Length: 447
Image (tube, rainbow, N blue to C red; front, side):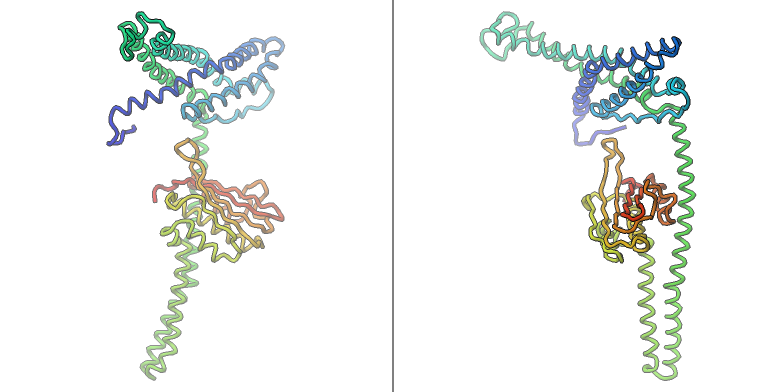
C-alpha cells in the first residue's frame, strides 16, 4: 500500500489519479482504432472452427488465424505497457507436438487470446465509445458559449450586454455540465480499464498451470544452484586453508624459529650475535604480512568496499600479467550496486583475467561495466559486465554455454545463478573470447 509524502497536500492524490485517468481515456479510445483487427481475428477463428468438420478445411484457415491471434496478443501487451505502464508477461510456448490440428487444439494461448479479444470487442468498444462521447460532449459544452459569442449569437448562450466574464443561467448550466462530463470521463475510464487489465493478466499472461510449472522449474534450478554454491563455498574454504597453510603459517613458523635463535644468540654472544637472526625474523614478519594481505584480497578486497568497482577493478587490472588496455565503468560512483552484486562482478572480472593470463595467450584485455534496465520501467535492473581479449579462445563453445567449460567458468556460472544472474561466454577456437555476465543490481539487499 503506497503512502503519500508528508509534505504533499492530501488533495494531490485525487487530482493525480484524475489526471492519470486520461491515459485510460486514451487507451479506451485506441480500442476503436484496433477494433477491425480484433473482429477479423475473432471471425476467422469462428469460421475456421466451424469448418473443421468439413473435410478439415477449417484447419487451413485456423493456421493463419493462430498467427493473427499471436500478433493481437503482442499488440495488446505493447499497448498496455506503452499507455498504462502495465507489463503482462508472455506465456511459454505450447509444447504440443504432432499434426497441425493437434497443435492448434492444444495451444491454449490462442484460445485465451481469443477470449481476451472477445472482452475487448464488447467491453472495450462500448467503454471506448462511451468515454469518447463523454469527452467530446464535455469539450463541446465548455466551448459552446464562447463559440456562440464568436459567431455573433447573443440570447441565452452568448455574452450578454457585451460584458465579458458573465454568463446567463442556461449558459452556466451548459458549462457546468461540460465540466462534470470531463470530470467523470477519466474516472469512468479508470474503472473500465481496471477490468480490462485484470482480464489481460488472466488471459494474456501465463496460466495457473504454466505458473506452477515455472515455479517448479525455478525450485529445481535454485536447489541445483544451492548445492553447487555450497560446494563452491566449501572449495573456497579449502583454498583459503591451503593458502594460509602454505603462506602465512610457514612464514610465522620461520619467524618463531628466528626469534628463538635470536634469543639464544643474545644470551650467548650479545646483541651483535643476535642481529642476523633478528633481521631474518623481520623479513619473515614482512613476508607473512604480505601473504596475509594477498589472502585477504582473495576473500574480499578492502578497496572494493571503500571505493567501489572502478577503483577495485583498476587495481586488479594493474596487477594483471596481461595488459588491460581499458576499464570502463559506465555509471557514476553515487549509483553503486549492492555489495553482493559488486563482489560477484569483481570476482567475475578477476576469474576472467586469471583465465586469460593462464590459457588465452592474449596481448590485450578490455573490461566494461554498465547498468542495464530499471526496475521502475518494468525491465530487469542489471549490473552488466563484459571482458574481452584477443587470445586463442577455446574457453567455451561458440554457442556460449559454460557447462563444458573449465571449472572456473562453471564456478562463476553457479555463483551468478545463485542470485538470479547469468553468464555467457563466446570463445571459439582461434579467438577472440568475450565473457558477458548479468547480476541483479540489488542482489543480496542493501550496501
